[in-house]
Amino acid sequence: MAQYKSKGTIDRVVPDSPAAEAGIVQGDRLLSLNGTPVKDIVGYQFHQVREQLAVEVVREGRSEPLVFTIRKPEQQDLGLEFHDPTFDGIKRCNNHCPFCFVDQNAPGLRKSLDIKDDDFRYSFLYGGFITLTNLQEKDWDRIAEERLSPIYVSVHATDLEMRRRLLGNPNIPDVLTQLQRLGDMGIQVHTQLVVCPNINDGDFLDRSIADLSALYPHVQTVGIVPVGLTRFRRNSHYQIKLDLRPYDAEEVAPLIDQVEAWQKRLKREIGTNFAFLSDEWYLKAGRQTPGTRHYEGFPQLENGMGLVRQLLDESHRTARKLPPSISRPVRAVIASGEMPASTLQLALAPLRAVQGLDIQHIVVKNNTLGGNVASSGLLFGAEVAEALRPYGASGEHPADFIFLPRRMFDFTGVRTLDEWTLDTFQQQLGVPVAQAEWTHQIFHGVQKLLRGEDCFSPPPDFSLVTQLG
Image (tube, rainbow, N blue to C red; front, side, top):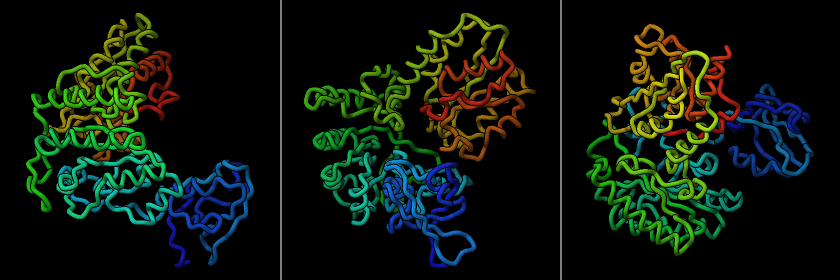
């Protein structure tokens, strides 16, 4: 057994699937499909679509692998689910970006938060941004063969020397050449620029937008995000020294104007806004976010472009369905970070108009990370619980239930950065606690509470909800 090192452990075999009918069982480890080694779930998805498959697995207690011959309709899923999407380990980042959030984590968090991944497979599967700096020729071949599109790329600057400074890596190749190579393969790309005051903004930002838009349509978009810094960041990086700081409020409006000028120009020239600003820019400038049509289908929603607009639009839709009153008084408490606070005040207004429904919005300052990080997604459970104690069972204003932002929990929706779970919150506060992001979810919980039902199980579409950060 020692020669079989695959980590492709099968977590579940879907009942009545081709794999189940063939006799593959939970705990088997997938080695190959039709003789091709399978290194991750991407390879599994690509190679398992054929009608006839030779599925090679290792089974505990057997000295030799088993091979199952399976015939199924083309494109039908084989029916295997895995413990880990990458069987051969995650590709690590070889850069030293001075604003890397992994290097700014608070101490004592779970070890997985300290992994600096830069894996093209995660980019394809989950929309994570990568730098393209650690790709080997076999990786390029695989991207082309398996048509891994779209891919999300952190560019930061198209000027090669500036990008090398920002990535803390003097040996990286020219990203424009790499993006063109992806385009020649037929791979679509979404890009991002993490912009730092007086470093890669101004003329560098103009050049980056111009260079990237010249690669349209295979470079589909560029998202522009302000640098985020915590109190745990080292002031003097061991690779490079840049005078990094957050944007001041007075610096934000000119940058918005600069990008909006590009949007107007590119709309005329190539038919798309192409460049999108994350919501933080508008919130910090006190400006209204653009309308829904501006975001052209929200291609960078998970990167923070348009979450505010979607929340406000959803609130308007919910308002049309709300009753004028409810049968008995209910107090609901909603927690959030500082960044979405003003938007949530607007979004919650229709709920507050319902007679008998007391909506309390608690804004939690992220002192753990130094007060500069204002998103809901980086809140710590301990700080949130402390802010909510007045609304716990033994507090001055006990709530009927409390809603927490979904994004403050991990991908599976289970743990916060400091390992708090919904059960932990409920034990500490003594009242039921649930996750929600949209106003219709909050009222859904109110309705179930009034009917005497369990109002803390998520609505049917909960897994599909995009979270406000």
